[in-house]
Image (tube, rainbow, N blue to C red; front, side):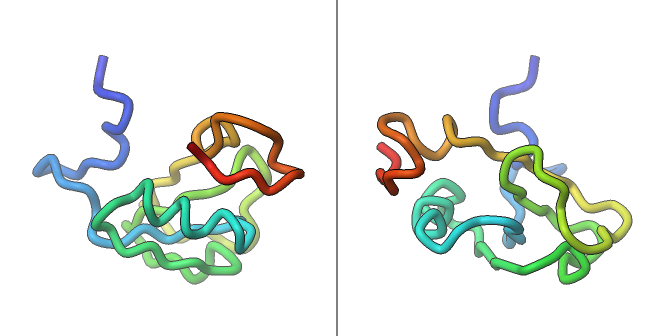
Length: 95
């Protein structure tokens, strides 16, 4: 079984240099940048702004707005990934 973050690694075992993020509220953005480390996180309003072959992070199982280009690798993130204590409605930061 591949390691948990295998979806983030390309052919050479490195994370993509940029990750496009769709559907993240403003208060979650700093935590998302921290999770992806050295990768540049680019927040976009819809999938049409994600170039073909890029990596796109999306929030939960919600429909991703816009038309997705061919070959985009989609990573779906959930509350448990970004926050380990408290409720999201209370804007409790991840631990």
